[in-house]
Amino acid sequence: MSQAHPLNILAISGSLKSTSSNTNILRALSKFKTENIEFIVFDGLDQLSHFNPENEKGTDAVANFKEQLKKADGVIISTPEYAFGVPGTLKNALDWTVSSGELNEKPVIAISASPLYEGGKKAMTSLLLTLGALGTKMNEKSHLSIPNISKKINASAEILDPQLKEDLAKIFNHLVEEIQKSKTDVIF
Ligand SMILES: Cc1cc2nc3c(=O)[nH]c(=O)nc-3n(C[C@H](O)[C@H](O)[C@H](O)COP(=O)(O)O)c2cc1C
Image (cartoon, rainbow, N blue to C red; front, side):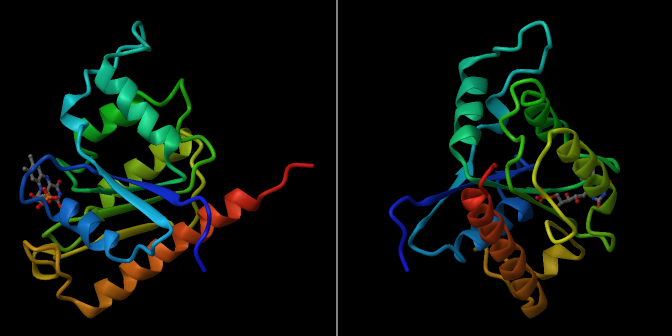
């Protein structure tokens, strides 16, 4: 059944690498969308100035990022782990939303992927703390850590691993359900 207003999903990769497996995961996720879903992969993470609480407005690139977040009904983050943590570019982007609250009450799913066996779990732990501080709508089904990613997806964003395909479909559907729920939530 098609809806009058599309659901807007904004996908953010924590990696700036042109061959990023995390960006490829977002491309693979976009293939699960139905016709009433608008799926945009944000590509301006490297344009954001460094967060400074004395300049909450930031640059035009920051304003554009906040605008895209505001328009989004749900957000997907897929990130590598750098030095056991969240890449600085992604953390910087999230810091810009602390006071302005674009992610508050927003359904979000978080993915970490690594060629190593832990799947970036330390970065995920840290990312979940940050997303919690930002007031995102998440639960135990809203995150996924993917180990050995280089064997599971190719450069054309084709998923080679059936289990990963299933896991990604599941987490994508979870996001869509959470968005639909949040749109029908009535405050008494
Ligand atoms: C500076 C740097 C630090 C890294 N630190 C970690 C790490 O702590 N844990 C991990 O699992 N992988 C680490 N890696 C490997 C990344 O997981 C790997 O490069 C991965 O492919 C990056 O994701 P991407 O393909 O989406 O860019 C690191 C890579 C770089 C370049």
